[in-house]
Image 1 (cartoon, rainbow over the protein chains, first blue to last red):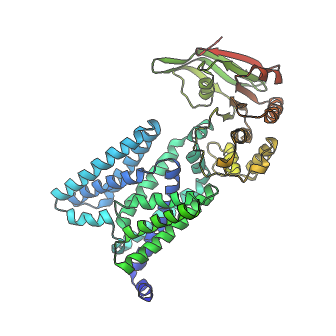
Image 2 (image 1 turned 90 degrees about the horizontal axis):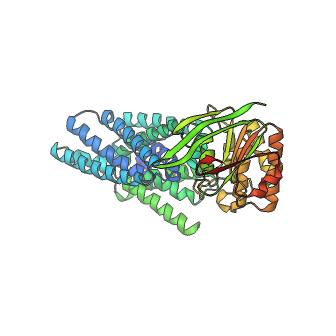
Image 3 (image 1 turned 60 degrees about the vertical axis):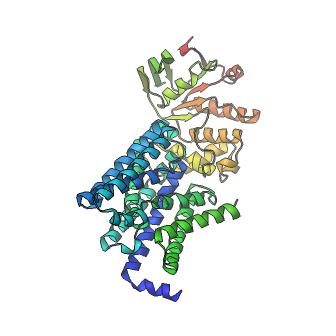
Length: 266
Length: 207
């Protein structure tokens, strides 16, 4: 244990701890809305679209953020729009888009010779975060938490019943766009930390666990954030102790919490 | 009296089906209108069009005032982790207003008291019976201080005591100038407010 605590002296560990905690907490807060609106698969679909756009960026040798962020935002908006308009077609749209995007990403990275670099995006590399990654994570966390606090009542209403919100004259498209954009940014940032294949778990699992504990929407958001933070710290500690990938360890910790909650709470 | 609703030549088509056909209706503040008809006559479609949930294929609808709507069936997740007070408060939301004021909270408390559900305020909605939930939705609609109240079969699932409470409240709202349009299948509802207009729909038309 003291060896693990010693690691905190290293700046790369501090960066991993701060950026990872913030992204985990923000992902879990957004996850509450996605789970309640039955959009749980969106994170998975978007992260694979993110992977495809990363492959394109790597092949073109340009900074990933310029391609990934717009691609994932547009995809998030299209998926949410399709899900909303054509209820059952939403699942199909996500399944088709995510499989096609993953295949496209693998082919492009293979043809461009960047396949080895892409593995860090597939499984994450929390210990390789740069100073700018940390700054981006902090700014994103501030934006997400502020947006959630300011629009809390509206997000509650829209998560509960969009039709009722419409009958009150509220334009829900603005809020769908807000949710899409924030989700897209969390995925783009989280892919670097947790990996393309695992970020959707960080978004969804804490909210699913918290749903078993919460008595209301507010407590659901708080429990989800706390569970996500605990799972991230536990996962990171586990990854140091057992020398396993951090992203996978965080998801494992989240899964264990979910199982414990299911077994002991209900 | 203020004109609150003016619907002229409203037509709603869904594919080949005509759900609402050339419906015109004017209504003023302080009026009560019962909308009746057999299943599939277009009653809920008419109410949803007034609530802004279904667009007209042609015709015009002019609404003057704030609307509150109680749906026939709430299209929401029954397991949504929300307390009664959280749901009731949403009735005070409107465009451009994102925080609840002290007044909003007082309105929510008052409408829960009027519907006799104050003791349920901290309960999760998935622990309520169908009738209790219906009263929660009516309380939500009333706490929005509506000028126009749209009720789609609000009495379904209500026991006789709740039924009486509802009509006492509706009479009070009418006297305060609220326009109320209520879909019902039960002709005995007309006796509670004898001065109300009754509109019968058949095949999407007013007959």
